[in-house]
Image (tube, rainbow, N blue to C red; front, top):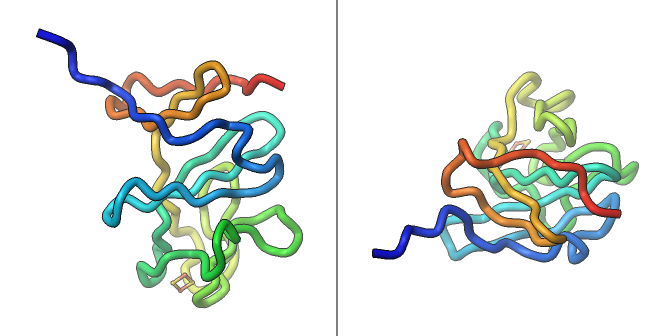
Length: 124
Ligand code: FES
């Protein structure tokens, strides 16, 4: 009997712009987005902890104008990219819901077994 897959392909890391973000929809009920920094990729559910709206109004637009914060378009909450913590707006201290991912060979996977997820430096 074959083992169940413990991860699911999301995208190529290179498909996420460095210093930018990309929506990752895995069907109507699982809407995620990824933010790629110099040394990591952060993946969160596309749902604001303030009122539950999706954060973006335009495709792949999840960051503020400075590119330093995740921005909710609905009421202007700003979230730290690394932690997902709201730093400004209507829900200070609330967090975006992080998703466990794996990066292997330049590919990003959703970790179905969160215990298997590890953070690794990304290949240049
Ligand atoms: S729903 Fe995001 S700030 Fe209100």
